[in-house]
Amino acid sequence: MVLEHALLSVKPGQDDDFLAAFEQAKRIISEMPGFIRLGLSKCVERDGAYLLLVEWSRLEDHTDGFRGSAQYEQWRRLLHHFYEPFPTVEHYEQVLSA
Image (cartoon, rainbow, N blue to C red; front, side, top):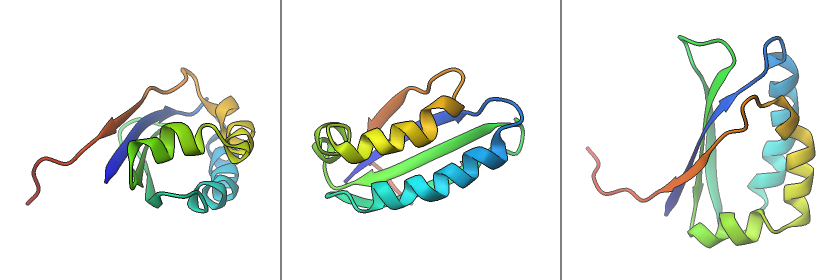
């Protein structure tokens, strides 16, 4: 399992529109091969800051499968205009848990 991590900075005043668009976008990503689950959390200290965590079976399910798909273009159209700056996306493998 690979965990995708992205810190999302939503432009001021656009939180409600972003969350409405994300409701649509989550249906797109959840149907992709290798998708396991996602979580979107809102920062309690900073307005407009969100943490997106997506679990994938394999790195390639995200980097090649999702990002190379027509569905990703729909995801991009729904969400990418909300971000300033554009987020850095990183991938992690678990090494410890408690």
